[in-house]
Every structure is written in structure tokens, then in C-alpha cells.
Image 1 (cartoon, rainbow, N blue to C red):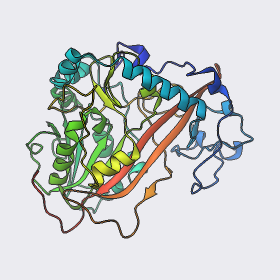
Image 2 (image 1 turned 135 degrees about the horizontal axis):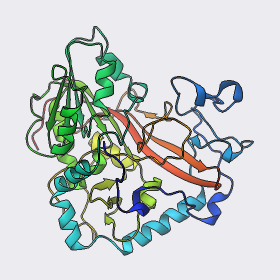
Image 3 (image 1 turned 180 degrees about the horizontal axis):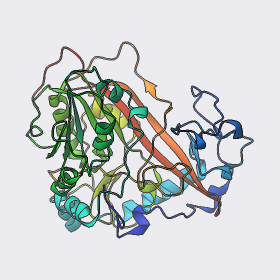
Image 4 (image 1 turned 90 degrees about the horizontal axis):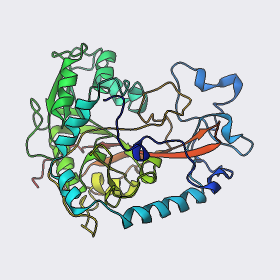
Length: 407
């Protein structure tokens, strides 16, 4: 996806290294997920920073550790000072929401802002997502030499930083990747890429919340849908339609691989006045939208235990009927050599697995195979500052023996 100046409002998305509060430099809680193995990745005898390939998610903060020994620590729960800072920020954001005029301007014509985003930036802003197979092993099955006819649909394909790495690693001659994006400009970038292979890849413009199927895709034909930093670009009133469309394209037993922003992520907390559309939903400085999810919220959206749409409150005017495209962010102050501007996931997420006998599913509901919160604490060792990141990651399956329920 995109290049140099992504957001003309640096206080929002550049994640400048500044301390949220003086008390945030206190000692960090050492609580970690009990199910995680006690692997000491930062031991000099086994430093994963130097391993090839790099293994994410295994640098755990312990009582005897120097917090500023490394640029990042995994699975660190934010301290009370950070929670206090977050609540103060949310209160300030709610006191100065986006004006009614701007709500209509940004919600009613989102394609304008995404086309402008890709027109102003080049395809080398985000490097290729090399962590995909590590985080979503199902990709290795579909791209294996003898996998047979397989269809992958990526929604919010951007400039192809997910689709092209999958294509490069593919050994399945019968694999087809449908790379779809809301932005016509983004699709043009994919098609112009020298790695574009029209035998195994089809790039198309598609609105995930619209009424039509992706070009060239039949109902019930897709093995895997990738939603990587795309759902957060939708207006909450589009969630139901988006989930229904994903259901429509998938085969029974087909899966969704999901990764997106979590509530309390530093990106959300850094938003200033005049950026809040409604709770957890914001406008960036470049006019694109972003939502920050909670775990229970995603369970309701994908598990069908309640309507995905929320009640419209005082800050919720200007609904909007079109969707967005994917974009994820990452501050530069990290250990790993990784995707510029991108949030890199970790192998062990402390994922909450569903029980062997899940609850009965409602109409168009997915089985939640896994869903977890991926936390990371980044530090600026020179300035002695700490920054908390939070992402949501999950896999959802369309149950066998189900049929489409028209909404």
C-alpha cells in the first residue's frame, strides 16, 4: 500500500514517540498469559531477533528484566497509568467529535478518500506481509503442490502486499487469488505490478458491503477469505452486510482469516479533537476511516449472538453506505526488520479456542475457531518511553450443512 506522507495530521497516525503520561514510566506489570511457554527469546544464547525466519510472540517480560533492553515485548498487559490515560483521551475525544458536515462528507463518499490515498502514495509504502503463513497455516495447505482447485479471496487488497507474497510462495497450479479492493486506484496498482499473474490472480474493484458478488466469484465457491486490516475501514452499519457477503462467497467449511485493530491501541489513543465519528470510530487526517474492536464485539459480529449493527448515539450521525479498504500502521521503533507502516503479528497469541461443542449458530453465523488479543509493548530505549499496541486476530469457519439466509 502507499508511500511517504500517509497522513497530513502527524499527531494522529505517525505515532510520534512521546510519553502518554509521566507515570507511564513506572515498572510494567509482569502478568503474562499462563498458557504461553516460558521461552526466553531474549536470552543471548537463543536471541530470536537474529533467527531466520524471525519468530514472533515469544519475548516475555519478567520481573528481573530491564524493560528497555529491547525495543519490543510481547503479551504485556497495559498498566493502570495507561488505562487512566486512555479514559482521559476518550473523554476528550467525545467532547469534540467530528462535525455533522464532516460526518456526511467522509461517510457518504469514502471511495474519494481511498482513491486519493493511493494516488498520493506508491505501492512500496508497505512491504510484503511475510508473516501470513506463520499466522494462518491454512494458507500453506491451499498453496501446497497437490492442494487441487482452490480459491482465495482477499478483501481490501490494497497494492497487493498480501496477495503477491501468497502468489510467490504458491506451488499449487490450480490456485486462484481474487484480490479485491474498494479503491479503483489500488486495483490499478496491483495490475501494474510486474508480479501480476492473470492466470492465478484476478484483481477487481469490489465493495464488501454492496449487493453484488466479487467479479468472477460465484456464491459458495471460495475456500478462504482474508480480512487483514479491512473490517476497521467499514462503517459499523456495514458490518452485517459484509459478514453476509463473506458467508455467501464461502464454501461450507470455508474459513475467514481476520486481523485488525483492538481497542486501546496507541493509534486510537493518540487521536485528537475533531476526529471521532462515534465510539471507537475515527477519521484519519487523510480522510480515511478506522474502527477499533473489542473481543466480545467480534464474537457477536461473527458468531451471530447479536446484531452486528450498534445503536446510533449522539455522535453517530451520517451513516454512509459504502465501504473502505485496508490499511494498517506500525511505528518504526521496533526490533524486527519488517513491513514499514505495518503491524507485525506474533505466533503465539494466547488465542481463546472454542469449546468442542459450540453453541447453536444463528442465521449466517460463523463458528469461531479462534479469536484472541495480540498485545505488544514497544519502547524507545533512548527516551525511556513505552507504547502499547493492540490487535485482534481470529479465524472463523462457515459450518458444513448450512445454506444462505437472505437478509
